[in-house]
Image (cartoon, rainbow, N blue to C red; front, side, top):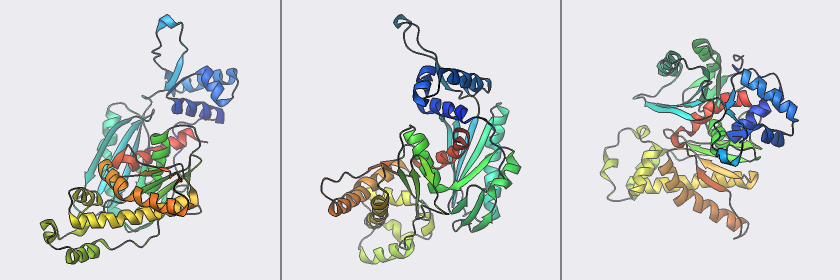
Length: 384
């Protein structure tokens, strides 16, 4: 089993008060009482315990003194420690590091010239994170945990990657192996589910109950994944809710057929030797420059994504839909292909007055999934 949460709060009321402070960024004790319904004496006792554990501090109140004595505001202690989130893609790692208040303090990406598979993946994760961890330790910064986002079927409770076609792994206990190496808590989860956690923990960050769909397109494999939030909680189903079981066109075969259909295509396509080396983001960027082959493929792919989202909307009727990935390319895909296709289909099925859910690109861009991976550790601290 996983190492215990570094922050061990005994009472549900402690977690409720701490989470109320997190959601509001800074808040007075009186407003916490109004928000939670707890008695002032209970709030006072909770604040005392949270301060003793160094979880919260008094915030700087910017209300002018001429107005009168301002209330004491409470905020999370951002210096408590850092939380690391890591997304593993076929040939790339994406890192997000957040402080205890949820502020992003570091993000980076590392590309590999080869495709990582099997035990090599675990070794490269250690090699990549070792200097990051060492740097924080040398600067006397406490590491509260690591969240790891992986493509495939994941048993989050046991910390086991059940199966990943991308990395050719089967029943691998990443959690225990990484905890033994780093000696701090580790949580693992499916990549699209981590994107959904980013949406509810950081893109939205409020206590209003919401239903959200997060859709991600794997930049390398070009597969589609979704994460589902119901009433602010990640929905996992029995095993693997959110997997999009759609028969996607073979990328290389489709491009080759487009080369036959489109005369005078861009010279770029004449010299392609590695189709797997062309990322989806690169395709969208080429489409934005009116490359006909890229435009055709992106349009067809956008319509497939839209069709799958329509199915989820019809069944689930979410409040918001988030698209993960590099922001400009996903905005182009969303505005030109996904949104018009969804709007047309839904309004034809219901009525012209049907209001479709809000569809947005996560403000965290390509780091949405790694940021959501960090939310796995936040979830352990702030939920009961």
